[in-house]
Amino acid sequence: MTDMHYVILKKEKFSQFVSRLSQMQKLVAPVSKGFKNFAFEPVASAGEIALKYIPTVLPLKKYFMPQRETLLEFNLGKHVQAEAVVEYEPLTIFGAHTCDLAGIQCLNMVFSERPKDYNYLARKNKITLIGLECNEYCDEYASCHLVNASFPSGGYDLFFTDLGDYFIVHVNTKSGDTIIASTKSFEKAEQLHIDELSKLRDTKRKIFINEVPIERRHIPELFDRSFRALVWKDLEARCLACGNCTNVCPTCYCFDIRDELDLTLKKGVRYRVWDSCQLEPFARVAGGFNFRKERSVRQRHRYYRKFRYSVDRFSRFFCTGCGRCTRTCMADISLKETLNELLKESEDRVWKRWL
Amino acid sequence: MEKMVIRESTYRLEKARILRTKKLTDKEKFFEITLEDGKRLDHEPGQFVMVSLLGIGEVPISVASSPSGRDTFDLCVRAVGKVTNALHKLKPGDEIDVRGPYGKGFPIRILEGNDLLIIAGGLGLAPLRSLIHYVLGNRRDFGKVHILLGCKQPKELLFSDELEEWNERTDLYYACTVDRSDPDWAGNVGLITTLIPGVDIEPARTFAAVVGPPVMYNFVIKELLSKGIPEQQIILSFERNMKCGNGKCGRCQIQNLYCCQDGPVFSYEKIKNLSEAI
Image (tube, rainbow over all chains, first blue to last red):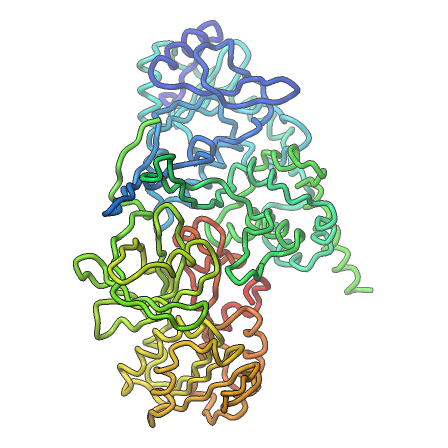
């Protein structure tokens, strides 16, 4: 890695940078909504941006895979006509944490897998992503280190790290280069800046440790042993089946497809909308039989989609450790606690075999 | 938000026209469909299509005909929801939209040269009819063929004229049973599992193809295993409420498999340890 890939942005030039960036195309960034809530929203000036924030209520998937998205437009009449469309918007996202960048990497894999989803891919290509490093934990709900998402690992055009008086910025793509050239706010990074970054990363390696006492590579085995665990029965009693956990998850992408006519009843749209495997009718078929009727089975399905099935299919976890599912759960179901309980139960079983 | 038309969309529909319909039972209706310009669907037996009535919705329906010998295809639709009820109101000449075919069908190349035991419960005959027609159209390529059929009551029997023809053919063994008889019924009464012990098969060279309601599978599989048919030679097809057909929407997921892409046809060996499968 050469120094050419790094530039710095002095803090006093941050305002200038943000306003110039917002003039290039629509810019969204984390904004404080009060009571420890944050949201990605359009901004035009640096003052609106919350540089220190805990994960936003909704993850970045709301831009890559909007909650509601038109797939077809059709005219009814003597001859029905339908056209497949994609809705998109050129957009720059500033301030994405590594957990959310990992979330987008997961979605990219899903929608690039054949049969490809051209709606997602067309929209993704219009989005510029600027990351922002977490120098310390956001709060006690995060488990980003466990799933290897606490340090930057690609998935961005530019990546900002706050080093006090200045940001050091990793330039990862040509469109990142374009931003550096167009905003004219950056300076060349010197060796001392690179050294400062290394020092921060060393400190981070001491702060960020596995939030659950298990080695990353052993997680799939833990799940192989846990399909019939009692932990799921406990979730049966607690889960309200509201679907909040999947709505706020950066890697949950299940959807429903529906038709809607306008008031003329002559034309309409087919759209897809976020759906949730936690809702009762999700796996129900025409005759009324439900393949995941109990809440315990639906919760188990959610966890296995994050930690087991995705390993088979995409060779990575689909949990990014952002902690949103835990923060949002009305029944206090905690991802870290569930993993801890699975571990405990699994170890108990091993002991019992010896006794 | 900007909008553009895309040709590559996996949701793009193809125009199709209903050529022929026939009421099969109180709930099931038969449709013969042609794609615009007489284009072939080019499906495999056991695959499904997504059928659209724009403004109402889209549903996955098994193709009920063999791909060989004709350019049109058949659907057998049970009226259970708003799309299927609306489909039942359509007449020959009416237009519908389809996309597909989707999924993995019956493994024809593997079945060839072997004996077949085809077991259909209720509407499970619809997807199996595509296999049966294929086998009868290429009869020489297969060994002995057994067809076992079951449904709740005689009046629910699908394709009754074809059943009569199968019954009379000398190149296949056919048996049928109903759970509950009625006064005009002279055939077998009892669950479909009661027909299995009586069939004369060589288990090592027999492939069983089983499609029926969820409740049927465990009982039938148990009988087939006790007949000595190996696990990898028991072929099943599953029903799920697919929304996309592309392995994305999550509706049809069975643990790490997507029914719409990895199935709907699976060997019992592959799914026997998947708890949400059957």
